[in-house]
Image: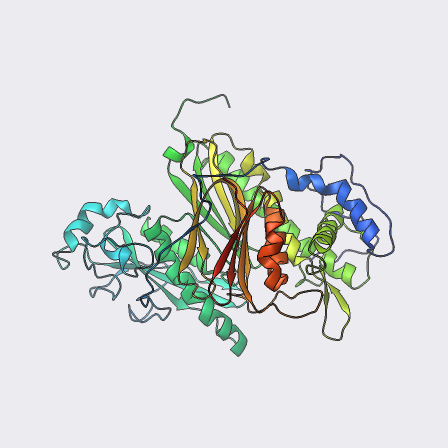
Length: 236
Length: 264
């Protein structure tokens, strides 16, 4: 709680201001003139980064030619049955729907929904399973059984979020949200859209070698936190 | 810490960290000398501390935040931390430069004006919070907060960070990828939060634009410009074209796209 009295001095004192002591301008309201004055006084902190952005190669933005087939992994936690207990990785005997390797020969690219299970040729994560993955296509029943890892339930302002991943041969083959907020109709509406989105993003990010995703991802509270803890358990 | 002859940052393992603040996840991808050592972990802690402090000052969800108290008239601007004036000044400049489409003063339920600088705070706060990361030697990083990000690559010949841009019509897909070495990127849209951006001139929700991404040297201005362009609706791409030193990527509701500017 920071229920400061109005007369108490301000306390946001992060010392990265260039001008030394804090400057204040006494005004009654927020007039345009005052705002402009303040702007000139404090604009420097927005220019502390490098003078010019650098991008690799010439075209800054490359549209991806993505096949639009229906994505296999859905937001519903249907693939692995009942959620496992938090913190205890369990090995499931039955392969998950998205996890079963299909063809390593196919050149899976962005958007192809079963990429990460079979080949990690373009993946930047989970490369330890390379050789195993190569053999898994022909004899899926003889290689390491897929294991599931359930992340810690992260509490958000919308409710708890919990993520489960399935790992085969060192690669994430499925991401399921085993718990997401359903506290009221509005939250449900928001999350029914947001959660499956993020699920698929994770798989795509792997297959495309993407480091970060830019988008309108405000309601992803908890998802990444839980996902991270699942990844941590899996040692990925 | 003297110079250490070691492999360049991009040749070293990538470390990821995620924490929640201000209602969204903050993600860090970091590689290089300080990726996972005490100075690096300290820098990450400082980033998060900075963002938490910003949240305490600016959150419109917290009744005790400075911005909420300013909005209620319980305190005047002079009594607020100087950062409040800084953010409001940025908002005022954005309002002017967007012809009034962007405004931190919103119309509330009963027609009264409310103060909501959220459109300025996020990018500004992330750029500001990244300071300790910039101070790390021989270390590359990409810092993202709820879909807006900034990244650094020290070696100009090193591999760029690869950033995916969501498809607002099918967020299960990436619509584009952008290789960035040292730059900022912000995306405004309504894919995950519903309609929350309005044209401040009319109070109407833009209908022809689905998502706007802006790339530039400053995350503060990339974020402001993305939101302002979105609010401008049909004028989004034309307006972005006037913003020098920034690149824009507009996705229209009909699925077509427009690219403005260039950083090459």
